[in-house]
Length: 196
Ligand SMILES: CC(C)(COP(=O)(O)OP(=O)(O)OC[C@H]1O[C@@H](n2cnc3c(N)ncnc32)[C@H](O)[C@@H]1OP(=O)(O)O)[C@@H](O)C(=O)NCCC(=O)NCCS
Image (cartoon, rainbow, N blue to C red; front, top):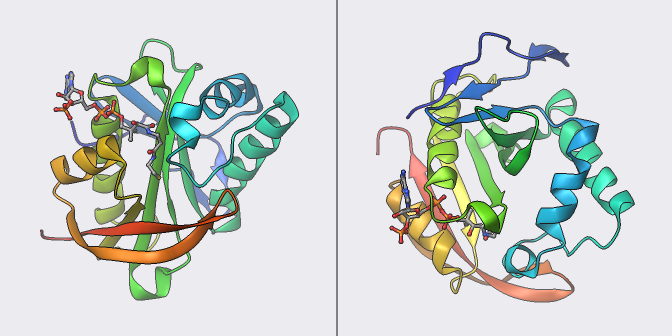
């Protein structure tokens, strides 16, 4: 299941090639402008946005901007965001995952993810994240990652199960830690260390 580098490692993005991955059933690739319809479908669904820091998108233009922002993460050095697709339909994104590099000087990156509800309950998120985590700890993000963090709302049952199944440990609940959709929310802080 761990991600292996794709033979076509994608176009050169910034100083380093984008770290495209393949797992048993999935590819994790760069975002492309054509992903806007998929992103619109996912982020116009309240089952996703209820638990995500990204607010509900209501137009294709919102989705286009979100795709452009995601595509810019790697070349700008701010993070990495993979579009997740089934191996047999690599152009059709079914979700995304990635790391924010804001705390890179501490050897820490922050994980976040989303999956189209039409593809829930098949282990795709778990498989994609296992690949992304393997890539981070293997040093393929251009830095030595010692800690992966994830922040999720304590009531987000699916996300909580997912993190637990990947070996993350919950460290506590950060009270009213971030403003999501104009509301201060509590966030459970989870971590996975290299060597856990
Ligand atoms: C969080 C989220 C990605 C989880 O999606 P999910 O479909 O529940 O997670 P997975 O893809 O890992 O699927 C897990 C389930 O598939 C089942 N499954 C079926 N086939 C499987 C297979 N071949 N391999 C592994 N698991 C499989 C598992 O049993 C598991 O169910 P369980 O937890 O009851 O045991 C999704 O709910 C989502 O996008 N939520 C909104 C966004 C969000 O909350 N993001 C987090 C904040 S950043």
